[in-house]
Amino acid sequence: MKRMRIGIIGHQFMGRAHSNAWLQAPRFFDLDIEPVLQIACGRRLLPLKEFAENWGWKEIETDWRRVVDRDDIDIIDIAAPQYLHHEIAVAALKAGKHVFLEKPMAMTVEQAQEMEATALISGKVHYLNHNYRRCPAVRLAKNMIDEGKIGRIFHWRGAYLQDWLTDPEFPLTWQLEKEKAGSGAQADLNSHSIDLARYLVGEISQVTGMTAQFVSERPLPNKNAAAFKGGSSGEGMGKVTVEDASFMTVRFVNGALGSFEASRFAVGRKNYNLFEIYGSKGSVSFNLERMNELQYYNNDDQYGEKGFRTILATDPSHDYITNWWPPGHIIGYEHEFVHAMVDFLGAISKGQEIHPNFTDGVREMEILEAGLRSAEEGRMIELETL
Ligand SMILES: NC(=O)c1ccc[n+]([C@@H]2O[C@H](COP(=O)([O-])OP(=O)(O)OC[C@H]3O[C@@H](n4cnc5c(N)ncnc54)[C@H](O)[C@@H]3O)[C@@H](O)[C@H]2O)c1
Image (cartoon, rainbow, N blue to C red; front, side, top):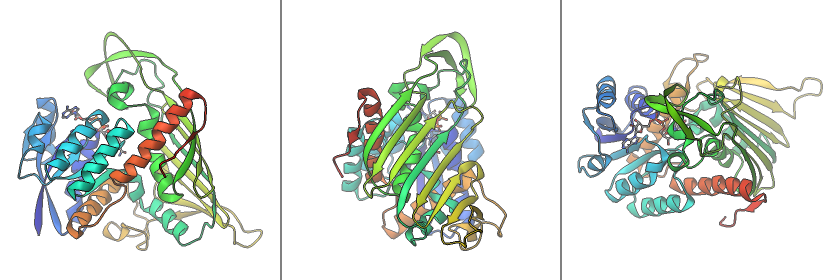
């Protein structure tokens, strides 16, 4: 079996999710390529060392350029904040590496376009990680749509709701700084929903957006501060420079209407990634907090017996499931990342494309930017590059 060495940039939330997935992928799936956890990169030596020891990364490095420049590294896994995505991805592709990149793709459409162009010239596999596409229940929705079971799609409703910023004492982590995050709920949460909407419904042609900021100043973070977890230093306040919530209404090229709600102020909602798709023959609905289930309404059911039914997407017929457990032995968030690694390595070994890739990422960035521009200018934005 061919071995490929990975260099990972970033070792916290996504660093852990990716490390676990690289390890699990060859244990549960038959792969042509064995992923080797070669070198981990982060800024702070002590937590980086602990991370590397825990997950079995052989070496550590604090300068990502030295990882990208190494001849013996085949794959660069970018699990760092998005202000670094463009620079690292372009350097990695130019150095002849395959790139596994966390969402959102970049800070601007221009950056994304340059990344896409570099990727296309490189001939290497480029993947933008929207892991929710690889949840079996979401794949079931996709398969049902493709088989015509939902019919003509009229509506998309996406809502990605969290509540970790509701406390005004929550610190000013990098996710709340425009120069590091690009934007707030839009880049972080709506990016996922846009990817699912493009995957399941199709391309978007018109966007109207509205944003809100509920807390404008927050305590400065201490060195251990992290999203969801908190950790403020008590040494002064800093300005929040992104929106807390971002809503959009859109028109799809196929005529469907859609709405997107993204908020980190939806009290009680933790990682409530919901979509509802309404079509002429039926409807499907998914919520990540019940991620093994798909709700399905079949309009052809007998009158008097119609209603939403819950399909447990854990049968051998459901994508990825045969490699895990018997029916009903449910899977979790981390499994989506394993599926992403499996498909990414499969794309490398077969010389194929994988989606979403950097071309999808450019489309996504255009929609994200259009939503924010619409909110700022108070008008609908037409996406002209379709
Ligand atoms: N797919 C998902 O569901 C999902 C979930 C969360 C985050 N993300 C994305 O993953 C990326 C990372 O987010 P996170 O939540 O893991 O952030 P995090 O704050 O938990 O971790 C960021 C990591 O990047 C490292 N880093 C920062 N600057 C660096 C530099 N100059 N050189 C090397 N390493 C550097 C830090 O040391 C840290 O290990 C973001 O783009 C985010 O949008 C995706």
